[in-house]
Image (tube, rainbow, N blue to C red):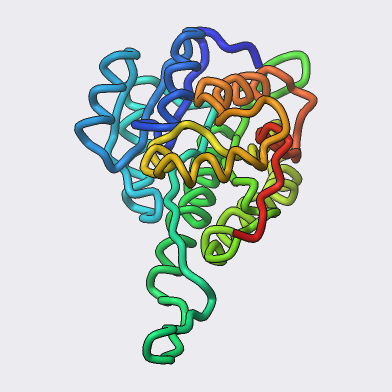
Length: 261
């Protein structure tokens, strides 16, 4: 799929971090970009700078997602590219022990459900509803491609650390979803791929102190630095343009494997 002004994309979580870099990267190729995010102020600012469309969308809410796609399509037309970057983190053990009073505390179930809903259910809702729209497009020659869905998992899908049980479950679900979803949509000419980013210079990691970041950096192989969000966008662009990549995942992590803690 050639990236140019004939293409339309929707990027969830496009107001910051990996999503913002992706929105900017696609727009730089001429692609018409729609942004879904909950950050109204930042989303509008990014959309204005790239000539895109912003809609405040809760990706875990089916009605909100429907309204978001309708709003973007009314301006840009039907998207042939969806990139799911919306997501949240969270750290809590399956069960914790309070060393001071000896109490035993199970994982907060509401927090677990929230992470699953936003990261996993949200990615599925957006992918399913976007693919339904892509199915109305005319196929692109020579292969008959109609669209591509790119989901964002995490290296935590494979290397989950202590306290990442909810986050890893959500990202592991995203990883596991790629192949069956690609098979579901194969006859319609819609590809599905997944990116597993490692440590990137994003707002989440920007909140960490230098000692924590130095400890994480020690597990990198080469290059010995956090990734730049634009490097994630480059992988997105490659996956869009390389039609033969389907049902696949790529780790972008400088060769790191996350330790238990």
